Amino acid sequence: MKNKVKLIYIVGIEHSGSTLLDLIIGSAPEVFSVGELYFYSVYRNKEQIDEVERSFICTCKRPFEECSFWKEINQKDDFKIRLRFPKREVIKIILYAIMPFLVPKKTGNVDDTQGLLKEIYQKARQVKPELVYILDSSKSFLRLFYLLKSSDIEVYPILLVRDGRGVINSRLRMGQKVGFFTAMLQWVLTCFVSKRLIKGNPRAIHISYNLFCQEPKRYIKFLNERLGIHISEERFLDKMAESEYHNIDGNIIKFKRITEIRCDERWKKELSPFKRIVSTVLLYPFNRMWVKRDSLHQVNT
Ligand SMILES: [Zn+2]
Image (cartoon, rainbow, N blue to C red; front, side, top):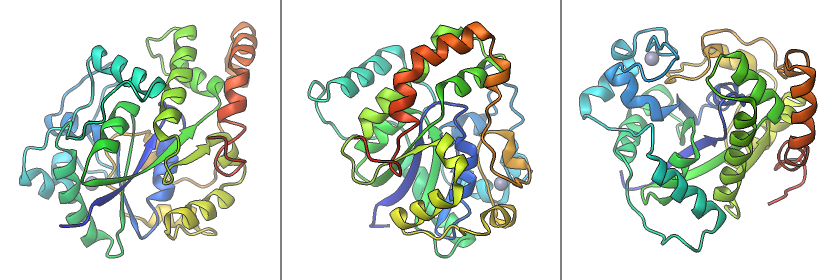
């Protein structure tokens, strides 16, 4: 294939609603969602890598190696996709985000994503004849950094930001081994670096999860216009139930029938008064910058 693969990439921190957004955008006839593609090698090798016990089941409810979509792609080549990066590289990319002039602009492939995407594209066209985009909701800004440098991929980044208090509460509730202050710092840092990486990028879109949940139809209309796709504005929930998905990893809501879009605000009840007050005060300027504003509510890049 001569043309570049067009890739919609959702960037941000975990527990920001990316699986939901992935499923909604993936219901468009022009988009094929693969979920969190940076888990590809983990799924292929059935590696248990952290405290989350994975069953390696595709959204089609078949085991990954038996899924009609992935089975054929897995036979093509032994694609290696990087999930984690050494600390040294993480620091380098954060520094680049702060001071872009410091790091030389090299291009090159960090893993086999380019080759894998080409195979996915060929296969996905059989499922969706009107296919234009592949959608990857890996979220990692490290992965985005390299994707943006890749010569054969045209990236359409979507930065998804959810109120930091909600993200922190979800992470603590899931029993993640992360402290309250570390979780706040990670949220700020991830949003900051992601925002810097897409700064000035005409293809980039910034979406506030909280504002999205208030008026999903308006956001769908906006995404349709910006990306030239056709998510059903009136029937997107039905379309999601009807669509064929083969996402890797992501939230378990992908197995359920979603009947309404509701903002998860459990943090208001679940965070202790101390944590609620501290996070409200410390995160206030950041929530104002990244959650109260987005591409639809005045551009602030
Ligand atoms: Zn499948």
